[in-house]
Image (cartoon, rainbow, N blue to C red; front, side, top):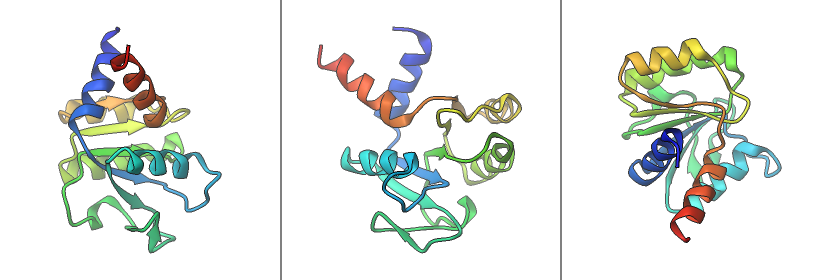
Length: 139
């Protein structure tokens, strides 16, 4: 098992409060599928989307700063060019991890998060990584 796999597995095992930035209420969207799965697995999901009040039965917040509870993982479903501002918000609220979903790659934002002491996962699906980790544990 590589270092990256060990890191993602540790994140998945350790941190349970996940703010999902860009969560869509549409069932066919990847963000909805990932959030639904994480919720089924016992994670506390916190939707972040300024266009909605509720998603998946949870209060939806316009931004990370509006969330009134601890956030451990910031899972990003936004375009790569939007990640630097989200990373700054993640740092400001004391998040532990910035997780950029598949297709979300921003090296400068990742470097900024790491320099602030956050763990970074980039260009990986949280749902797929959780499924892989479960598979490894069941072997």
